[in-house]
Image (cartoon, rainbow, N blue to C red; front, top):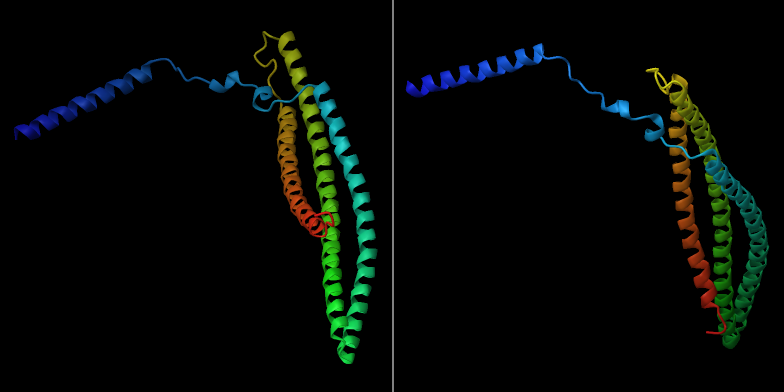
Length: 235
């Protein structure tokens, strides 16, 4: 019974304390803070100056121009390899026809010589096919680079619009420092910043794709290099 009585007294004391705290909180003036008031859009979504953006735009245009050059070189490379693949295929088929003749005549020495020649020619054929794939990957890289360059230009255009607007907000804040709305973003400001955030994502996706294609090109280059090394007469 004593234990039960102590628990009851303790519970009443705790509830009384909570009730007193609530009453005090209700009587006290509101002290709710607004930590976000110290943040502005230029901090949350920064943009570079117009001069810095212009410098990056020049680089992005170089990417697009380089992509055009890659497309042209890749097309020339594919056409050249296509011609050589056709010629090499004809050569291999001619050797295979001679193999049949050697078998028919029972010329074992000629047969062994022809088989060695066919193996060498097929090795060259494989190398040409790898080079054809390599040229195709360069074309794919050109497409990825062109996409990245154009996405970058769109991103920079959005960034430039935000930068100019942020400069306007700063000037407004200086001129109307006494006004509580001075420098506050408008719905149009948020629209500009949302556009910039969207361009961040699209430009990032284009860069990710460019990285994947660059890796693919490296793998294709390794195959061509290996084929070249295998036929190197100086080794």
